[in-house]
Image 1: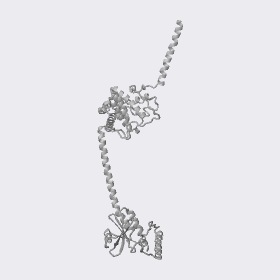
Image 2: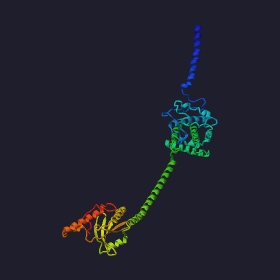
Image 3: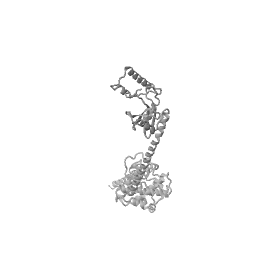
Image 4: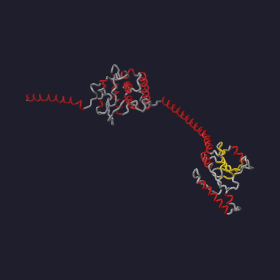
Length: 427
């Protein structure tokens, strides 16, 4: 029995030693470690919690819009900032960042997601001595930022988050200005921003609810155009004032444009009148006074007829020649009036009334035709006491046909009257 027991003891001890040795040798490869021994950061107080969609992560600092653009790297930066805050808070020197050889080995918490690390998120340069902001201590950061970012819970979240991000933005601008950081140095800008975030976390570390709210507020920094400045009560007033000033400026601009447009329209009218004069150089251009004198020269103002375009009055020129003056309604555009003058000025036929001149003045338009003393066809065809012989009727039809043929075969192009009726003047 004793011999057997001795043999059993000799058997069990090596076996146990072998099992323990195997466990120690397998454990680091089977389970992820909260951190590497070479990394001085402690991730136990704020452990990494993986999120979905973190595959093929590759982010560069130059693509930041005030904060990492992907939620995966945002989550990673928050975890690293908490670990840096604990390190700086507990270290006698208060250094915000750690040495490069330690920092390069601080991807241990992210082993559950191989595509997420310090390297893939572009955080390689966040170590002590990499730039001007990397050598800052917690005591170098102003307390105003920490104070502004500790007001979560005492006011609405949006208001508190706006005040916090606004304070971070102003502090970062001042920091970059004081340290004379080049605007194109994306790494230095990012390191300065992380130093501010770490200092805020270290300052409110004992306030659990404020820490949680601050972490949820940080993604608000990632907006197009750089760090967002959410509106607090003061900024709301400034924004309203800015909007009001912009609206006033737009109103002034629109008013000026309207006035200029109207002036140009008014200035264009004489130019069109000159175009009419140039086109119809064979016609006489009457003045408004000459037109009124011609209409009122006879014993009374005699209206010869009216149509869709306007009224026709009987008139007399200073030479004693009788004319028919057509006053165009104001609803007709100048372009229509110009086209009619240009067309009629080229028409010369013994069976078509001749256009003698025109008048354009103060928005009023007149056409001056030769006067037909025999009246119009309706006066001869429709009156019972008027007798027209067949020969005369045939002559009237033939003359009308000649006039239409002339218009249709005009050298400058076919002219279609489109409104032939008995009221056409007879020659």
